[in-house]
Image (cartoon, rainbow, N blue to C red; front, top):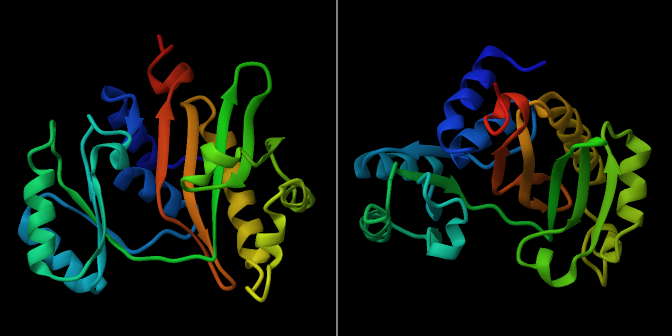
Length: 234
């Protein structure tokens, strides 16, 4: 069940039609899915303070309602080692249209980058997708799709349906992905997609960085739609 705090985030996002990444990460964390340590800084000194707490190096991301696809406009800088580099990123980001700050985030790594997504189909409701994530999404188009809600056996079946399953299961000496963590992420996400159905058009967690001991969501995007999300509401 959506909490009052969750609904406030979704209502506030109606003016842009999508949920800014810091708030999308907050929603995802609220349901128990693992996200990197992060902080939304509205001033440069806040960004520096956040990086000191999180620990260098950090990732810096542009926060702007005008930049849904941050990477396409140079709005993501990884491996920032110190305050000077962070200040340079801040100066560049602050020149963007409708600049609302910087997301300062823990660097995370994974052996396999996955995408976990959901599309709110008009006929079938939320349809959940699992596939190769990151830049590989559009290159390989290696995905498995199921209708929500998922059961544990559905997650196993979706993995088996991927060409990339050998990477997930461990390939040429690399350790297998933590399937318990991946399954938990998928089941929580499926429930979340069902709860959000009246509000959303789609959700993408991409990439989800999966390793032998963890699956963590490096980026999250929630696009509103439906009766309560804004596009069709009364």
